[in-house]
Length: 230
Image (cartoon, rainbow, N blue to C red; front, side):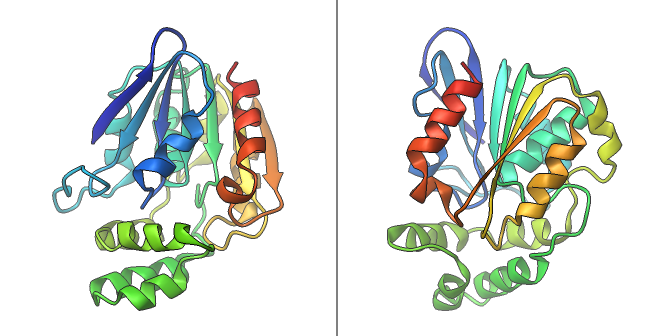
């Protein structure tokens, strides 16, 4: 896992990207934030080396993410799951927490069949089949497909794993939590965003009417994050 720091001073904000995020996509949530932003590059992504076998487990991810000292954090998809697993065990870890487009929390994911099909396409080295399963338009799905071709074991793991099997463990979290959902994203069902928001005692839920808010609502997302983490 590679850490890259941008800016300086307080607050320190940790950004944990989603599975298959490109280097540019990983930096999007950090845009416009004040202080120091630490953006992680997960193993098997961009210029980070591939992980050892068995790496893709939410407990392992939470432990690694927890090695970074920060005042607040933003997690996207897989990153949101890793941060949720982290604060389940360390409820006072952050002052503010943003969980964007969560794909699972304590229930089997409704997109399990889709994620499993993506894993099978990677294992078959069938890029065309994988591309057909990646939602989005323009260059975005092409870049995401290229990134996911390195991540077959990760796709297999996240298809069935639960980040926080007992959501009651999140009732002790002291952070203010912003949950961001997308209405029509097949990989990140809006029902999961509602479940995540309900699990935290100090939470707010914002849902965008789009399958890809990073593309269609980037300015609104930036304003939302800047205001919440000000």
